[in-house]
Length: 238
Image (cartoon, rainbow, N blue to C red):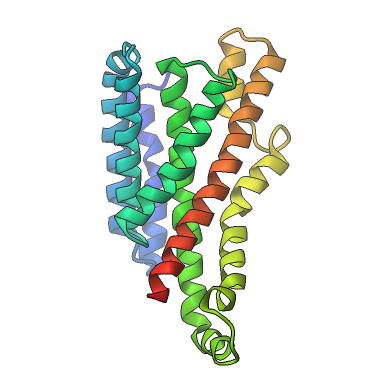
């Protein structure tokens, strides 16, 4: 059990990041301070609210919680790149169909203690992939304006001219997820597997459930990237 003093000592890692940011003029001090304090407040609120959340039985209440999480993720994603609407469409189009298809297949149960934690992981990864993919394609478009114009001048459509940029952006956004799949069980020790084993579950069952989640994350990440990049490029073509 972590004591209060030990918890305060752990903040020294954040302080180290702040000191380096100041030294190298990264200008991340404000963002790191706000993010670390927000993480503390949000997790404390989550801890106090989990009892209420896990008591939800109505599917409508569960969907409402997931919808609220999606709205918040969309807001955070569009602060870096894109728009709120494009972020919301990208995350929703990937997250909800995949999550509830797994319920339909019987892989996970229609229970709040499964839907909310797994849904949170999927939404979080979807948010990150949206930001990575759209930020990359935005940068590529800015660097390749003359090339795009050249393709169009030679008779290519706008869709054809930006196709390779779209491919690069999607591939880049999937690198962290693919690396996790490549190293899981050797370098990366997943939290779900560890938690289930500690709780007394069969190790093979824990590993199987972890694989389901990671495969879901891969699929959600791909769909989010495709939708997010497509919406961004379509907006530029107008």
